[in-house]
Length: 166
Image 1 (cartoon, helix red, strand yellow):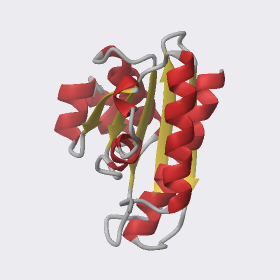
Image 2 (cartoon, one colour):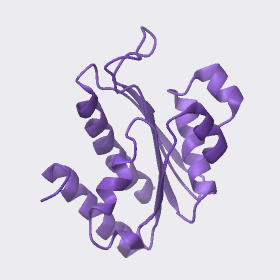
Image 3 (cartoon, helix red, strand yellow):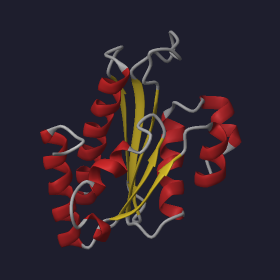
Image 4 (spheres, helix red, strand yellow):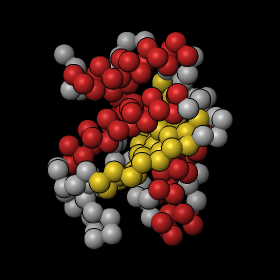
């Protein structure tokens, strides 16, 4: 029995197998998912060859202290922004042994949204040591906290696969 839905467990197993074959390690920098990405990956036996570390940086202070997200970025764009997600992904790589990073920051709800940044808005970024980065802005809508978090996890897995192939 798994803690995660079958599709997530299957994708995690695929990522672990592919990254193992390529000799790649991953680091996660998670806000709204609270460690679910690292948790889903480590659900798979053999994940210790792929998962270097998972960093849950829920507060702005944690994003700045652990990942090096600039206070200027946080002040100007906010925690839930493209700029913050990209800095989170870069900081995660800098503070790990991994070759690939994925970062997520968003508003899972039910509260905390605004007209400009509604519930269900999530910014994701992935990067590699060659300097390639990708970003996605997802607007999942007010579909419920757990659904936003699982949808974010699925998107993060897609991005890990995309950046590994970049």
